[in-house]
Image: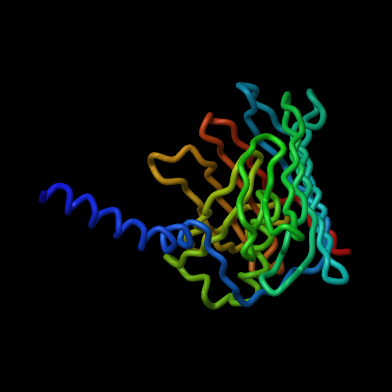
Length: 248
């Protein structure tokens, strides 16, 4: 009888906690933000894809106008040509960037499309049958760093060591919480010389197979990313270091 009572109590507790746990897994938070001006950013690239160690160059074309944004990011190598192509576009709403579509094409992989269906308030994926509700503030893998930039520009004094910034981010097949933690101020060597940057890291839990992301944002350069590093659980990585910025 005691075991049955415990089981019933646990079931009731889970039913009460369920919605709270789900909300924690899918955060919807309004924050102050200030999107950066349109710019073209050129990077030197180091990457590893399916065992190939490559170097080359990359570009991010960031555009914002009339409460709309677009991001086109490409990485190329002299040997293989274009090895990574990401595109994100959407609106700017009360939460910041509000993607409508995310496209990704990786080296030796088929292209994928993730759609944020604003009419049905659902995120759907071209590579899986998963779906998630749209609550507000959701990002994709291309827009998440730029949402972080916008939030940092909106509250720069809050980006102190140890502070955490959580977003719900969609990839090719599913979506998950990304928690960026501020490591601290670091010096980054770019083409123009040394620049002070805020280092943030998004590391998956030990039992998770998610992507690790490191971003260095330079307050003296409108908080544009001066260095980015994306590492997949299979060891593939892309590392970008800023060469130049051309504001549009």
